[in-house]
Length: 447
Ligand code: MG
Image (cartoon, protein in one colour):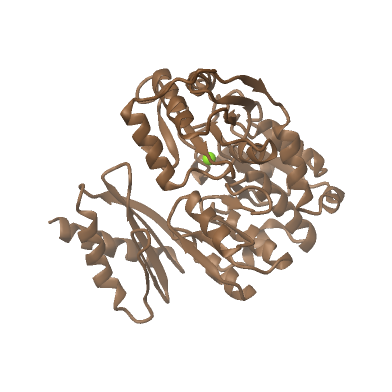
């Protein structure tokens, strides 16, 4: 499975050592002669095999590799900038289950590859034509990622004040790439840390997607230890979700919402987020008097708009915050530090900060959509929704229609014959009604 976010598949099936080597060679073909890249991986047991195969391909193509070891995705982005590297690679399947792995490619700016470059990489790979360099590349190690990442994050918050509060924090790192660096961060921020699933063994103790059903252990640990807050990361530690002081999972949309609310208290400026993210972001932007830019789904799209519009903050609703002072990818370390700073500065508990935000109900669903049928469905849904009083239409990525009492976003998947729908309203019933209506229209179109 090749997409803008890189290559991903089940190891030994779609993603073999051979495929990994080919992608190393294809990426080398796109880089200038003698280029050096930074490479990191998450903790999956297949990581070393994929790493070695990718490096063989890169070295054969004349590219030098700085191996960062087991580090987070934002850690790699940070090191690309720090080392002035010509690009980067992260070996991770993010929130996908353990049998999967993947290869993500990054630009010299530490961004995910823009769509046109990702497309070129795919074409080179498909062509199977990889020139061999006269001088093979070299491999060196660098173990400074965690230190530099933690220092950079501490520099954007009031680390001393946070440390003075001695917060009790439960962290679930799912035995992923976040384990070591995040423990170091919480230590520097003076927290009393209860670390569950805190060894980077890649043995996932629960399904890695950070959603309510997978975080019962974290919620229980927060209650048991009487902690101030609970955090969960995904295996490559770019996404972060929050559990409040009562042990309640507050929902993945709140990470970006709370962090944005805090950042806007310090620095006024535009925000950016994707079209599937909660209306809370519109409310937060409006109450601060700043503009919110909506972008197509995908963190590279959010990052591009953040750069273009000079945004002070942004990210994606699934627990991904992007702080342009750091790196232009989602960073759970930043989310943790901002959240603790927010708690310290307001003196409020997590549940009190949540209560200050409007409460919406979001519903995510999918329905089958044969190849080629998406355009017709989109146009039928548009016709049904766009003429309603107060409707605002955005068709930059599928179709989002905002109505006074709720909104919906539908888009075709790039990888499966399905359409995804997100609906949000003041209560669960209304959100369900919107989704049901869209589904009915699609069924009519498909006959
Ligand atoms: Mg991830």
